[in-house]
Each structure stands twice: as C-alpha cells, then as structure tokens.
Length: 442
Picture 1 (cartoon, rainbow, N blue to C red):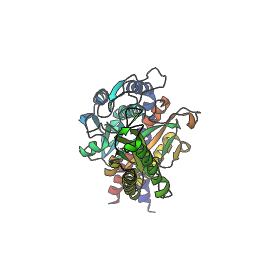
Picture 2 (cartoon, one colour):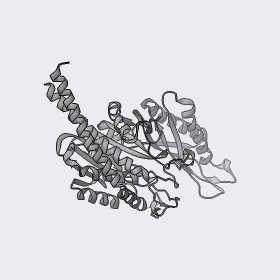
Picture 3 (tube, rainbow, N blue to C red):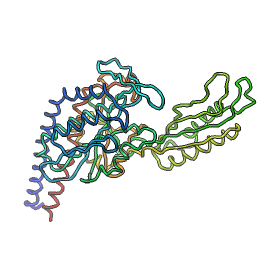
Picture 4 (cartoon, rainbow, N blue to C red):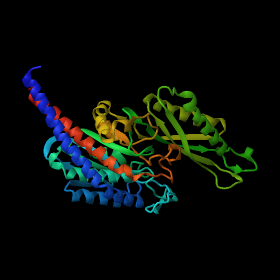
C-alpha cells in the first residue's frame, strides 16, 4: 500500500477513535451522574400514568425539560407527542431516538411507595391506570439521553431528533394515534431522519443485559371482533331459540385450529387469541347475541392474509351450521417490527462496548408487537431490549408485561441512557468518517 494513502487512513482512524473516545467517556460519566434524576423522573411518571392520546401532564414535563436544555421543541404532534431537536456543533446527518409515553388500563398490585392510584373510566368500565409495560422508564431514559447530549452538543457531528410518542398501546376508539400518526404528520422529515433507534425494557431479562434480533423482531398485530347473532329464548327451553353462547364457544375452539392445523409453523410463528367473550345478562335467558374480541400475531405476509381468510370461513360456517350468523371484523394494527439488518450489524458493536460482549445476546422473535415498526417502514431502524429484572431472580417468578404485578429494577436506567446516547453518537461519528473518506478519495 502506498505510504501516503496508508498515512491518510491511519490519520482518519485516529481522528474517529479519538473523537469517539471523548464522546464515550463524557457520555458514561454524565449518565452515571444522572442516576438520581432518572429514578426521580421514572417514579413520578409511574405514580402519574396517563392513557394513550391523553398524556397531557407527561408531555408537558417532557417539553419543559427539553426547552430547559435549549432544544427546539414541538408539541401537540399526533395529539400529545413531543419532539426535541438537538443540533450538534459539527455538520452531519440526522438520527432519531424514540420513547413511548402511555400507560395501560391495569390496576397496580405491586407494593411500592410510588404505586399508581390513578383510576379512570375506560371502555365503559372503571379501572386503574398503570405503567405496566415500562414506558415510564423509556421516557426517563430518553430525557436522560437528551440532558447528557445537550451538554456535549459542540462535539456532536450532526443532529439528533428526540421523539416522545403517545399511544403506543393503541389510540382510543375512534381516534388516530401513535407512531403511524406521527409519521403521517411528517415527524421523520424537516430535517429528514437517516436512521432511528429505540429500546424496550424487559421485566424478564436480567438487569445489565441487552437482547436484540436482526430482521423480524416483533410480530405484526391485528385486532378482531366477531359478532354472533342467534335467537333469544328462555334458558329452560333452548330448542325454542338459537344459542349464540354455545355457537361462540365452538367458534373459539375452531379458531385455535388455524395455528395448530393450518399454518406451517416451521416457517414462522403465529398466534390467534380470543381475549374476551361477552353475552347474556341473566342465568335463565339465552341471549340473542355474543361478541368476542381478540388479537392476531404473524410474521409472514402470506400467513397474515391466510389467517384472515380462515377466521372468516370458520366463524361464518360454524355459525351457519348452528342456525346463527357471524360477522367478522378485523382491524390491521401494527406491521412487523423489522430491524434493518445492515444497520443492526453496524451498530451491535456499540451495545457490546456499552454493556460488555457477554451481556448482549440474540433472541428468538417475540410475538409481542410494537408500533416502532411504522418508523422502520420509512427509515432504517434498530430496536432492542434492555434488562429490567432484578439480578438473581428467576424468569418464572418475574411478572410479565401488561400485568398488575409488573416490576422493573431501576438500576437498568443508566445503562439505557448510555446505550441510546452511544448508538446516536457512534452512528453520527461513523457517518462523518465515511464522508471524510469519500472526500479524501476524490
């Protein structure tokens, strides 16, 4: 190799390594110093959860924090979303970081000092509200990343867009919301985002650990409703009517054969779950109708289409055989959460440097769903999981997400800040180095 060319490459390598080292050490120190703040923020959000498209106080606190850091701030995006723009001191591309803000209609059972006592009316029922999926930790982590990087902006070669998203768990009935609406409203433009990163706390992954998967990571999700119409009659004379409860029970069992008998599960997993079945009002009256609702999870588009067809065939034909009728309504919610393979390979070294190579693991696909997938449809994205289970605890003893006993170990917060901050700055540094090499080669 020519000495001049070799010297240029070595010089570029040194500049990148030196710049990366300065940012890295600064990020690690600042993140650690924020631990007390992170815990305070998280506990405040946990104690005061808000449902999707109703995150008014949460959004206000986030916006005020970003303004105090000197960022350009936009509010009211997709109803209650907040976006902060941090322009680095050096030219470069735009990278985005995202956190979701909404809680769930779950009544908390965990005995902690900052337990949620919030109660609301939801879908006609009185229920508690809880951050039962860890979005409170996501908000706190991204607020921490914003504070860390705002204090180092002169060293950042590019722009970082901080996206605080409402309604990841779904918008209220009759409303749009979440990542889909944010994308629709142009959140990835002006300035245009080149790549996006996000994380999710995992209550069944030990603290200090990080997991991820290249490609299809979380399932596409659909919601369905099936209305079964029979003929009402006295419970003592079932032959005088058409029983929609018995018919619905047969439909539930029939739906389970889609996954167990109709799909090639060696290609990709799938799930069909009936989550509720409602009908009747009295013990001796066979009602006129029953309504069931549930969810579908798929990873393959062909399977996705086929499941829809089989559900309609099974429900309508079983109902017809009983003398009843069935109407199937399926709402397509989120697409597959797909980690861009090239981006994942490029950035996984960052997570291994932050957490330790032995603490970072590839996992099987999850049948949970994430509307981060809408961002990934527009720009390359990388979504990973952060351990939140106390060290030494058995997975079987750790409550899963969306349950009243969901619990997160707060020692995971600092690692979350370091991970997202490093992904953003390492990506920008790599882009800067690549651009410099292109200029030198001309």
